[in-house]
Image 1: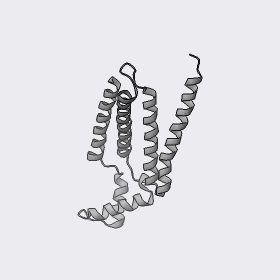
Image 2 (image 1 turned 90 degrees about the horizontal axis):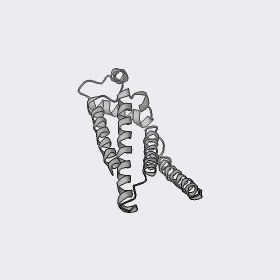
Image 3 (image 1 turned 135 degrees about the horizontal axis):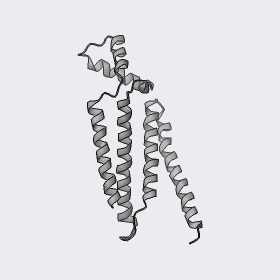
Amino acid sequence: MKLSLISFILGIFFAGLTYYFYSYESPFKQEKLQEIIEFREIEPNEKNLLQAEISFIIEKGLVFEYLSTNAYLALACLNLSIVSVFLSLHLIIDKLFFKTLIDPPNYSLAFRRSIVFLVALVLFFYFKLQAVEFPALLLTFVIAIILEYLFESYLGRKSKLEPK
């Protein structure tokens, strides 16, 4: 239970860092935004027009050309926060519902599932920003479930075959 508490505290810490990067730092390259403002002749009081241009860039799947390193740092912190909180919740649920009071939770299983969940989530949003169709987006979660099933069946069978 110590590891789940530590993991949860780390998740909150990384969520705070994510909030800082999204609130106080610009996720876009300033020179790219300046090019848009000059090309479209956007005035300082026309924020809606700039937001419309940014939405258009996202719809066309060109957003990665405009993101700064602050956005990538915020995404990394967000990913670490998701893994930490998912790991913490998985360990708590495993301990409370599937183990006895003496048995420890399965740390490797919880970590593996949190990584698979994160990869599926990151791929989902990456494909969404690349303007991929919605049915193809859902395949990322289907592939993650199949991957987890293959991991579980292979690793479960391997542990059953080992001599005791």
